[in-house]
Length: 386
Image 1 (cartoon, one colour):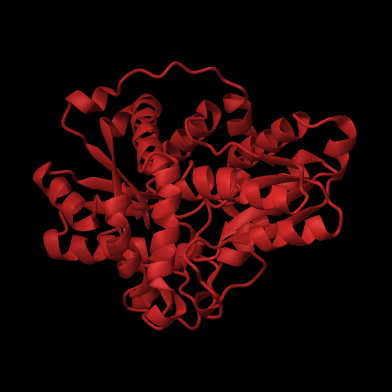
Image 2 (image 1 turned 180 degrees about the vertical axis):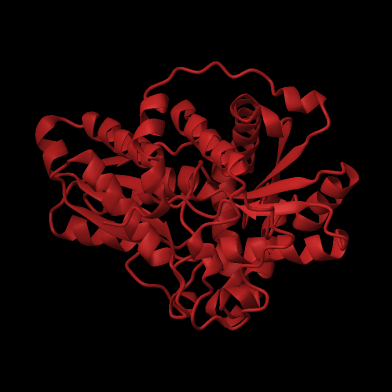
């Protein structure tokens, strides 16, 4: 069983966080000069339709992802994602939820870690705004001396989080050459006990919406990101596959369910070099076998995205209907889940209190990493407590 460094953070946090009702007030840090910056990082998404072509072009041409333009049909993918955006109003829900999470986490963190308050969250994205360059300039102008990078997804992947972190280090060295900011990273939490508990609870909630006999035969389809799991990066020694499997297995242990389950892959960017079956292919195949009920569980993100709200809730649901899968449920993402956000704020507070630098795995570069001098850097790390 893979639990890693999450073992030390399990029962106490789960007890403190268990089904807490929380009233969130506006963050005190919003009216104060922040003392500590929390960099909420990921590869991002276009905020609106007009940003999609540039986003896809940058993504397809990023050498760090191990992809080539020839592997991604840019025009076709751009058209498909534009259609998904238009079906839900033309804007990305991820940006809305990231802002909401940042506001709530800032308020909670000011309470849990007053010695490092006020805290301010800054979203930083690899392929969309706000960029690392923009945010690094803000940090220097605010004279912030302490910063922690926190991922906006639970599992580590060199393909998305890794390239996003690399971009931060690149601009940190250029914009803050005197190293006035001390850094650390909370790089992953694939088996965080409260995260696992919340995912399991959301699956149970989805199952409970089905009648008894349909619920018993429902297949649980976990969804991971094909972009993270592309084989070019996996074959270098990237840990994304093992972390996704760790999340899935921990959730099923927590759920104590006898339902069948599979790991499937979301493939909105047309990657054709990854380690498994797409969720769409799985649903079509299950339909051919006479399976008529599925529960979709996105475990690769902490909030709703266009891929989920449009790609799964609309497009994939229609695919399921056509395949004879009549009962289709999708679990809720973390979004503004108070139990999860309280736990995450406590984890960040503990990280700050103990002056942690990173997890052991962050300090381990992929054995076949092509750019070991660039990947998994940590500029001017915070001093370790004795």
